[in-house]
Image: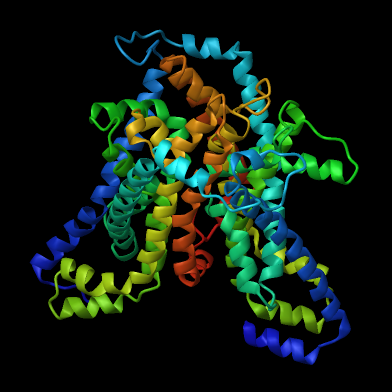
Length: 297
Length: 287
């Protein structure tokens, strides 16, 4: 490997890559890194959006420890994320395993399952509100047709949470299905051929070949899915708007309302920091559990 | 893969296999109905006049397909304006995203420069700092740069996407370095190698990125929520969310608007379906 001796080329080679990354780097620095630092600073003030802000130390953090409504929103977010995450892993994995087989209409099925994940959260929320609507929705009509009672989906906290989870899984499954298909197709066929020679059952093959080799993809889906769920806001906004009585009001919505409806931006910044720490801690735990590095996607 | 599958099928075309495929189809069809029916129901209902929308028992199809809701949404609801706003924002942001993400992805794949690993990790780490947890300081930065209530405030900050950079980088890693080496020996400048030699090779990944970027921006809700104030500058998602929050929800218009917002995405999906699914399966990026 001989390097080019031409000095103009080598100077250009040194500068050129920096020029290439510059626009991206500037945007990330200005709109993510700087705000991250400022976010910490704001959380130590009583800033109200306009006018002066004064330094008040850790008062916001002391206040948030006693803010029951905030902790309820955190609890509901956990509840939501921990019920929805296994579904967001299991259902796409099931669909992907079926759709890597050589079957007819494979492309059509893949496209149909992918399609909902291209619909915005806002529209998905509206759609599920429309079909589950308390007295007007078609779901309740169908329930009465098969001899069951109407269910008040949005006035009962438990039911509302169930609808939000259902809508989330419905809207995200297709995306993670494709991720799993990508992981599954990268598994070498020879493993399965060897197992066939040994006469392994298909369940056995799935358990001892597919699952272990799919670990990096599984890890990717869990991390992405978790972050996705934990910052959920758009979908609940049009579906339940956090109701009833805060049962589906998740952390981001609570922070948004503190900031932009009650104009307590200093306090909301402190809440954001808590959310950030939780998100980072949980991602780190997932990394540890999965022994990190194994991700090669 | 498809070859071995076919061979296997021929060799072991037993009834057991056929039964198992029967179960496969059963599961797939059940899920297909779960995925399709809500969307189809929304489309059908959007053509029902208000009087038929909530009659009990509900009718499967409207007595006559009426365009009333669509005309209402488009004219009275100012939906044409929101559509125009969103198109301007989504198209500009897509162009910018493709340009700058391709540049950065190429640099990370093809050059070793001081700090490249650290900067790349920083790029990936920004995935962990979503707008949702930084909306207050970002709101302030947006105001300082006079981007508040301004389309540029939607276009510029969201154009740099870690997922996009990652996608392009993965693609360029598969292109052999020898191509660049021989061009260098021929005396081509780095700029020329990038523009004349590498960019044409990157067309597939650039189109996948373009589709994603458009989809992200078209469906985005959080950025417009933080950046835009005037109703006149609303995007479609912002308008939908806002209308749905009003006391007397006009479901007819709302359904029509929802269906309309899905059309551009559907059209793009149908046109680029093959490329899209292939790119997705190959790169598996976050959406």
